[in-house]
Length: 400
Image 1 (cartoon, rainbow, N blue to C red):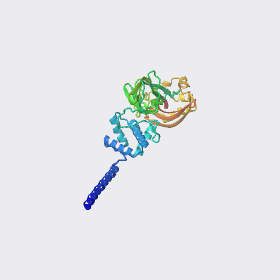
Image 2 (cartoon, rainbow, N blue to C red):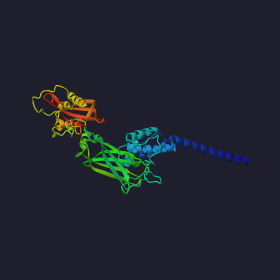
Image 3 (cartoon, rainbow, N blue to C red):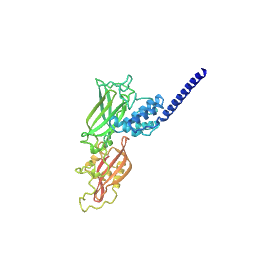
Image 4 (tube, helix red, strand yellow):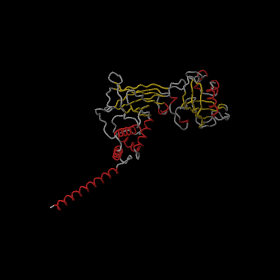
């Protein structure tokens, strides 16, 4: 009887050992199958790999990892729509490890002036790029507001160059129009700029509280050829957990001199309107006279002389280098408010001649201009020149 009992006990022990061995083997294989890089083969493999990567982090690191993914999904890709954003995110992080994803998120945050870093404390609430956005009891993005207001203020209103940008500031307000108070949120704020019904510019940022600094819209970011009637429509939307607030400003004026001009043949530049007497003529246009003598120097020499005279505050000398109908009289040219009389000095960075023919040429110049208040502004200018009796004269002046 004892012999039979011993055999039964021995058999059970062996079975238990086999079970434990199989279980340990399975756990080892399971751990070995966990991915430490993002796999963007499909949305499902992306989610699975992200979950595997997050499981190796402590609780705080997991929160920051989710925030980093949200930063990349919201600001690191250009696509619209949930699935399109996830697909683009997958392509962006495919094959990257946790620390590489953190580093990329830091770069995107810095590029978009977002007050976030991977080494900082959690600041965006509960972020789940794959989950539904439902309010929880402590959801910092569930802001109670009635509307969104925006203010638009010109910046860099130089006496010579005019405004160079717009500051656009959104504020969530209550029923009485007063700003609501909140902090610790991570609200997605989107700026869209339209002209003539066409979208020409988009930017995103995070609204952490109602002291949000807003957006700086540089006119140099807006393509001149897409601006209709020198006006733009500005729309800002702010997304809370339950609602997206939106507000627009219609018919905002732009500074045409500060817009982004198209590269390439200046003849194709809409700013060089052939009806404008100051416009640069096409390089293959026939000469207005057949007996115009050839220019004696490089057109850059005339532009250099013009800028040197301005820098030396020799306005008469600068004016004599030009034959630009838009500048009209010397009094208008030298006016300290609307002309070049406010210039104190100029520091030329670069200069190049483009599309020169016997009778017309373009010179691109980049330089810093300092006014008499000490303010320094970096600008790029395309000078149009024409051959006047063998001398190059500045006939147009376009700030790019």
